[in-house]
Image (tube, rainbow, N blue to C red; front, side):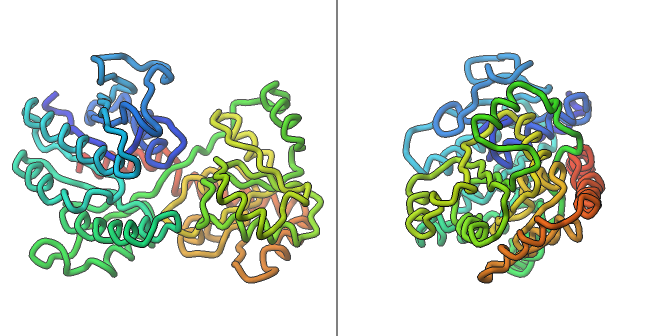
Length: 407
């Protein structure tokens, strides 16, 4: 036990769910499950949105009412009051409190508490001091520009920015999953740390799988999905992501409607009725039979296969760091059409085509993509796969985190 480095992970709702941090923790424990040098302790939600149900995790072992073991990681569930949006803040604070008590009770030497996202700035200095008193370090992952997201009201955006500033100040290391986020942290917060110090930062990207889906082309579930959604392999463009304004669904749908493409546009997302109705009012996309909202797909192998069989993939995210759905698309789909912003260029480099939000720009790119030869498509696809395996494979990322935690 003394030889193990204890890492406490706070901020994800559960393991293996449909979110960036959830996938990250799941993969980290999967790739490190036989690593005798690291012991993970993971906070999960006991109730509320996205709560942890360990019975769905094959191979999990119950320890007590609110604890279980999975991939050799010790997972603890935090019960929460039902208080709406503030629940996320209460969750992080209660999880942090649990970590501090656990470290103290078990006399753990040199632990690292790693917090994902910058939700609890106003409380962080208190916990920073407690962790230091116990001989530990506090790391954070600042995520993307949460304060820029359109879904937040002005006061909440203000809070996010203020919270970010305090969390960068009171941390031993900010682990950025994008070079652009790391630059932004220094541009905003150099000279604003404790006693006027610059923040300590490092860059470790997010990961993706480089393998193919385990499903065959004639898998029953796959064929039924295509039949149900009225889609044909290699005859559709695809997008997968949260249905929020900053992911630019409006531009993608509007431009697709302008294009001459005879292919379909399949949208895999959790539909927000209010936003959907607003889009319909603006664009009348329901009159275009090519535009298909096809719901969500939680079976990861099926989703991977749907990506592999897409003719092309659209990525319109413009807020945040390295985006999981972009990495997954580059790892699976040959032809990727990305919004031209720093984050996306940083990840894909020359292995994708780029569009901007100017009127007609994406529509003409779709027409161009429709006329690319099979050779051109497989060449750009090969570049994308190489880009992922060289810099973003989960094995590479897990190795980087081992160095970070142990060294």
